[in-house]
Image (spheres, rainbow, N blue to C red):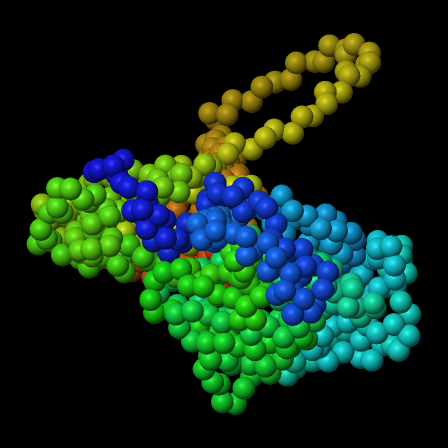
Length: 639
């Protein structure tokens, strides 16, 4: 590889390409280049007059040279997505009081970073902008305790929700204002037919309090799961204009906004919510969006747009289906909300459509080598667009390294099909393969499959180490911790008198008594053994969630079938390996593995119905494993 010889231009081209790989969080080295604030940002923070904002950019912008303008535009783009402290809109988990879902919201003032190194005094729910997302289901009863730690009174209006009048959150019309230091309790039942994208925000001095950050998403899902959106990505985008960066998306201004990340062919739901004082037409480059709901109500006839106009207080649900990989600009099309001679700012983000390498390079084993004076990766990505595994792996490794992520190309063999006659997997020369491993602190070397004609390695969304459940992939039983018992002091008793020595009976003279004693001893040994086995069995599952416990048990069942667990196997790969040894076990093993994967790596809590199905699958798997074990003990076949 001649990666070290690439020109600056080719590196920039690769950076543009790499944005579509999806590993976009590490790009922050050029953040400082965007450090100087533009007149647009300063003006927009204090005014909502479009004309004054536009005029304020002219005085200094006209003094910039062509190269200076280009450099500022480039610096902002290369900094995206710039890292800042704080993330709003994260799902708020309820506490349960019987059947009531209880949420706690605290209104407080914090310093909020909306651009790298730039903060503003924000008025927040639970210290973040937007406030935490509340997500419930039709028919749920919710109780929301709102505590006011602001310097002035406030109240919360549940925008779009059909609530009792005294819960509507409008001071002096439906309730007294919540004064500083006070708590107000809102409680209501979500009505059927009120599913959709809704909001919550202040309704007291609202033009000031809401634009300062007192806003959040309140999403109601349909009770009938079949009626819910069938999408792969569910993304909420709250628009605001005012003191927080002038113009913001989810509390951040470009380049600190968050990209919408998806894969080619996925359905992406975007829930637009306008909490600002202006209209914002949001334009997505590359492909249209289907408008499917307005203000939480499904449209009888959805329609297509690439620029969706969202008025203040309005919610618009759209579904996009990206069919081309790349980084696609996504911004408000009131252009002085998004761009000036100083570069892009404010209401700008991007939809990052992954699979750039897999989609850009066509698989072809019969390719000509690149010209001797060209970099291999540059040539493959931008000119030939074809190659085999070596080209795919080299391109991905270089792209990762450009982002500062340690990466290596790994050689070996991809899995060969199982050959029943040979009794194993038959590997041939054509199984030779190259792939990529990337190193992530806390996780180690993670494999990736960039080659287009090979299936992707699907590991789900990895949970950060500090949020992971403390569970090993293959839990082993831990010895029970003995409970310390205090030894009582010996009691003071008078010395015993010497008893008369009784006549000792001869047990051999009583065969019935011998048999009885042997039975008692055997029963005691069996009981102790069973208790010990039970303690050893359950000790390995302490502290695990129900699904993690079932998966741990399925690993033991797999060992009974003669299939040891291996750290290199994903749960589904392990289930498939169990199925090759015992075909009847593959179905129940996959049921448990699928649910465990969703819980562990995607953070999805299984439903009660899914948990019951997993328990039934485990019982079936256990029966198959025990039967196989017993047959092997008797010298029979395994399945």
